[in-house]
Length: 371
Image: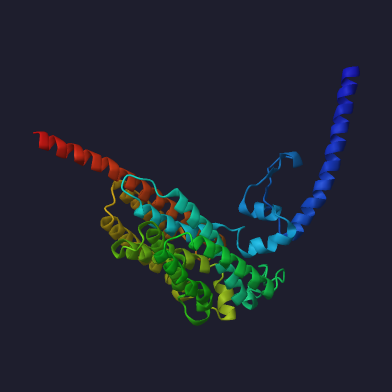
């Protein structure tokens, strides 16, 4: 009886403690919902489990939300809570750095890190410029109305000062490169400043974004080699532009109704129901340009296997795309990180394979000489 009574008392105390904790967390969760929902706070609800069963997410959005409150609007202005854009800016740099590596060698990890830092800073600067230009439009679009400048969390003057700080840090990264690359990198600034304006004057703003976002395909090679090799860098740059036309057209379909109402233009509005045909054409041209890159850089079997995987991924992406479902458009858009990573892995493995081929060729040559 004493044992049963003790167990009952323990259960009662535990239940009371959990009830108190749940009440406290319930108020916190209510505040979280008011601020934008559970997922915005990086919490993943688990079915059938109490508050002790909830796990904190390590997502980028959760990291931003865990930062000091005065910094959060600036981190969101840089889109650090949505890192997919940084990946899409960074990956063409990795392709170029990988292709420029010596046969049989891994890419320069120091240079990959340097370009990664630059991608974060320049993507943040580009987003800041974009939001400064578009703040009046952003207020009229549901998806963008909560952006820091449009929502009034950051003033135009504060964003201008913040932009200057980002560009200063990015310049510090650029100055770590050779003189040719410094001049080449600086020449992209005009594109960074003007591409957000293209949606006002042309149905092809995605082309302007492609010219801007894939500059690293030129810069990565020159950072390693000291100059650009046109036979490799130009088709690589062109393939990146085609890739941007694919993923950013998909992205633009999320906002096409709002864009049409407020007078902004995009390839999504230009292509409409013919989007899949256009995307298929861009995919074919992209793969053709990447094949030319492979031939001109003496790539090996792993590169072409990765190229086939990229082609399969793009085909599935286009075939299953539902341009009338914003959620599906977002999922397809973000899946392009996989495309870029597959190509990078193929470049690295293809370059390492060259060592094996070179060694075998040398051995066969030595055998013939001895014979």
